[in-house]
Length: 427
Image (cartoon, rainbow, N blue to C red; front, side):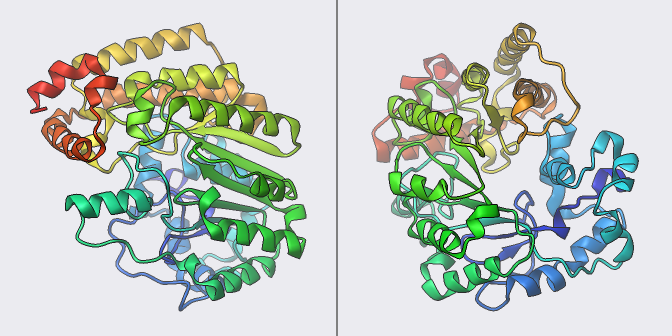
């Protein structure tokens, strides 16, 4: 692996605090094999960023592959714009012109003068996870991200215990964290995740504190919502910020969305999407994207997302290729089903031509069509090359039947064309 293919600028300006308050060096990184947890209760953001992240920066400078970065490597393999590429764009570096653009980046001296991975910088870009308080129980979600599915899983015996309370339930910790944000120079971007952010009390509290401090005047807020709730008071708070990046979570504009993002209702989702789009189009500094996590259950209807996005000039941000649970990966579909989907996707691309850069900037509204087609192409590449994992079909059916016994629905109501496939697997 070369330096150009492994180096990422993110650890010099970005970090994350997850739902339980553990720090992580990246919002995209895979932490399955992490050995230690360093928590906000015991360590300040400055200490974690400047001391504990030094080895990661050192590995990056040495051109070594960081195990947690495999999600970005997979995205790039299939032609999806990765988190690494997005973070490099923020410092003016393009992977297709790496050496030239790195040499002209305003950050190049930071890398050259601190070859041991140390830095005096503080985070300018955060992902802040606010716990699992959520009113939805998406089939691909987990207890750590949804209180509703946590309760359901516990009742069904899929987990032995409920997740620990989130760090942001402690007002003192939230106050300390906000104070650290306010005192950080050059801070630019905060992205919030839940649970469902709009019903999480800490989201409103932090926004209000940032407005009261005046930091909102130069700060961009990002967050994701599941399109089942509306809170006008929070919207009024958001209007105080220099920018807002809104992720609207929807899997497809087909009724199977109701099954996958249970218990949402597609008509309500469409109505709330329209309200967000109206605000974004009339408010300077607002940017919206559709956030989707294609699975074996929704990949056949994914074109409905790209159709909607194309018609409304809205980017599609499918953050990565789902890797867990394995039985929900699109690669669980046998080749005959995949081939049909690939053919439909290629036909759609032929009807929606858009030539653009190799790496399009999802935050640039001027290249939305290029971004949409590039994202769709990445799923064609994935479906054409991902290993056949149809051996997971019995596990998928077992999982769906267990949920359906709790929810009183049936996947065959939404995807009757898969009846033979699912029956063969034990449905």
